[in-house]
Image (cartoon, rainbow, N blue to C red; front, side):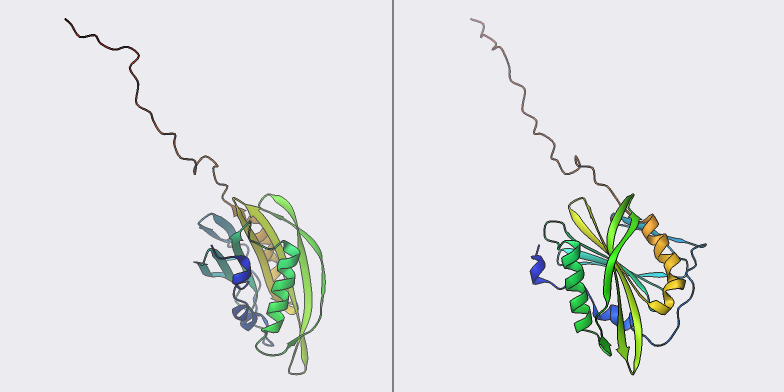
Length: 210
């Protein structure tokens, strides 16, 4: 598997094209008619009017993207646990790269704070980031949440991205995904090879009849 330093922190540009928008086209999350996603060890429930648009595995890592009807996103990024950044360094690198690659407008310095959510059966501490993007004379505040969950030798980074003005409509959907998110626990005995069978040895020898 390639080292962490030799690869990017998964596609930033598609996120920005969705998230940084001046057109209000978001709709309330339809949590009352949920959908279920379950593939290759990751499962969660998500709103009926949201879509899983990507589940890609390449070069030893994987990402899953859930899109809302508007511009908000939920993303899972999966890396080898031993090669992954810790959460603070991941947030710093992700945020720096994202702001440098904004296709239009200028990202300004924002603020970060701690946040907690129950994810995969445990209370996890994440990072809440809020920053404005200046675009054609207007400031469009953006909100991102980051979490890291380690399981089965992998590091799972869970990220949300939404415009502040859409947060109220989207938050129930994020809550639904986070509250139902689960990683299939691997049986440690699955990868253990069965012991080789040795042939039975005779304990006595038959004597030839004279």
